[in-house]
Image (cartoon, rainbow, N blue to C red; front, side, top):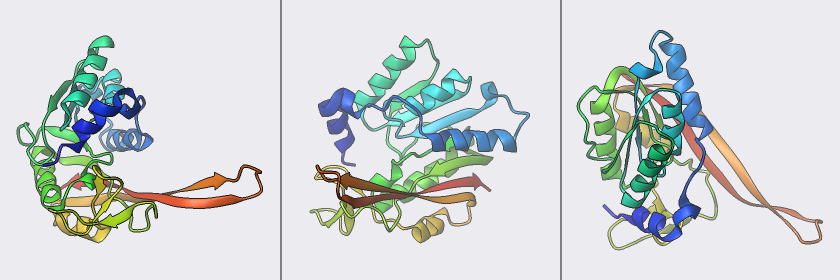
Length: 229
């Protein structure tokens, strides 16, 4: 599997580091907490696949959740580990791939995919869903964030030597073309979709004389909460 993420984190350093949690992650944990109000955070195991610098799981660790994170970038994992140590937080963070999770069966109550699985090919995606299903408790919930079909015009269709029909943001990190319908088929009745929302964000530019406002691109993703059956 191409480790362009290691190149990204090692080259851009602080510029590639997220400092704060994504709101949708907070929504996911709140959804689970409302569904199971009698389970305390200390008894809830949370995994983030592709945790990057660890901003999401760091926030949850501060709330008392048992947090785990994996990322294919060793630089990102080391940054996250250092951040946890500096803030005296507990967390299990390690270098691993989304299609081979180093955890036991039925262990996690919550699994987070915040913009990670959109960056792998279909074979890895299907294996990752298999792995998420394997490591989750029945009744556990997960976040998936596939790219919407109407997303940014700045993303161009490109073909490389190994993969066909993938949408690339740049020469290294690409966005796959797995549609919402394809995601539903991959879930294959192993999960219920309990929440589905499309988030669209239009980016504009303003002329130097402030006379013209131009819509440049649309960034659009789905937020999907799935529950293991």
